[in-house]
Amino acid sequence: MSEHSANPSATAATGRPRAVKAVIPAAGLATRFLPATKAVPKELLPVVDRPVLQYIVEEATQAGINDVLLITGRGKTSMVDHFDRRPDLEAKLEEKGDTERLAAVQRPSELAEIYTCRQPEQLGLGHAVGYAESHVGDQPFAVLLGDEFVKMDEPLLPAMLELQARTGGVVLAFFEVDPADTKRYGIASVEPAEPEFSDIAEVVKVTGLVEKPKPEEAPSNLAVLGRYVLPGKIFDAIRRTEPGSGGEIQLTDAMEILRNEGTPVHAIVYRGTRYDTGMPLGYLQTVVQIAAEREDLGPEFRKWLVEFVNSDASAGPGR
Ligand code: G1P
Image (cartoon, rainbow, N blue to C red; front, side, top):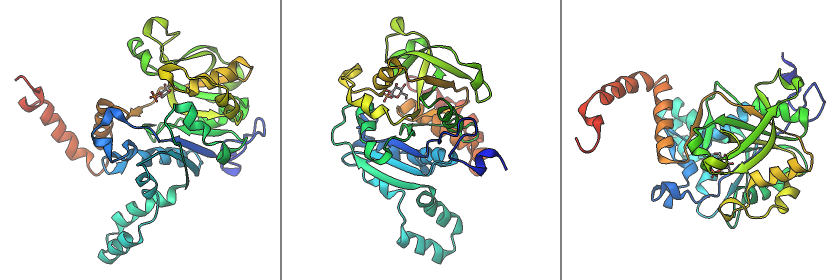
């Protein structure tokens, strides 16, 4: 038995508790997906046969977090229904002896304790996270953005939780982007981290953060990935954060306040597979990759895909 499974909520190195709650901001309007998202929350768009949000909750539970707060907004209550029981449907499947589908229908309700709160106006990611304060209190917690997730067998969160329990500060994850794309992300400047963290992962110390800089103003090509482990004092910093990029209250700016006041900010450079379902192209790529890797569908789908790519039909309009 590892030390973590013996005592999953504390790290041996400091005795400081690990974050045990996750917050998923999911109140956004998803304009990039209109009209599909006019009546369906983008978090419920399917990736093969599970909604995006289920992959995200599974990522949290895989890391030992089973208390999940969804920050929702108008027209998004069906997200919560997905994690509820459906006794009528379950009874029908049981009657038919369809145990496989029965298990698939029950699974979301068994993953985690799901709580919700409403963000009445969409004033930015920092503003959304601010609504988690009464649920989270002064304890550290994870934030998982509702439109991206990482490959199940290349997990990121466990190392982030361990690092946060050791530093007590802010822990982020970065991935490298094309320098032309910096205006889509929070971008960091970094220096080497203290050697004591080298056993955890590829860790860097953050020396600056800027939200969505133009390529010529970006301090690096290290972009903030949608996973954060934050100390409870972030809420006070959010209250003091002025509107920033896009006129919104940015989480990046709140973290920058804490960093300037002396809170350590570290990040893990993630070199695994990140799925970004926030835009149509990334969403399509996610569906194709996950379908191709599925044991049940994969072999047939990959065969078809190769044929399709090599056929005239895949050459697109204009041919
Ligand atoms: C948000 C954050 C940004 C981060 C990005 C990751 O931006 O504000 O710092 O890099 O998520 O996906 P959004 O995608 O909400 O515009």
